[in-house]
Length: 140
Image (tube, rainbow, N blue to C red; front, top):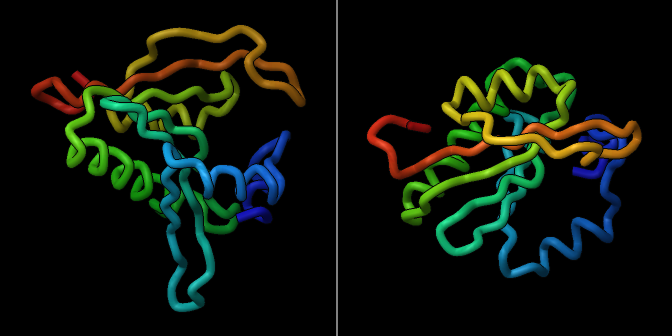
């Protein structure tokens, strides 16, 4: 996961951050495995806060991007929220991360706000997205 983290993020977490999250009772990890090699293809990390999920990380190994791994991880995240009876899921994404924004919007997340200078290395605004589990249609 550390290698994928370094590939995908300009301000990557180190082993200590991951270890802290593994000990956090709010945190949940899901890992996608690339078969037949059994290597980690991608992962996501989210917190469950009562009836809300907060997506903190989703990352796919560079050589396996655009093969549906991220979409399957995000679907699993949303299925988990539904099964737990959550009301909503929220996330932040870099304004320049067009691929992630397409994935979230395709999955019925809706833009609900912005956070100025939320990211560093480089400094960049975040888009805030929400998925509403209570609607009749996904994201409605």
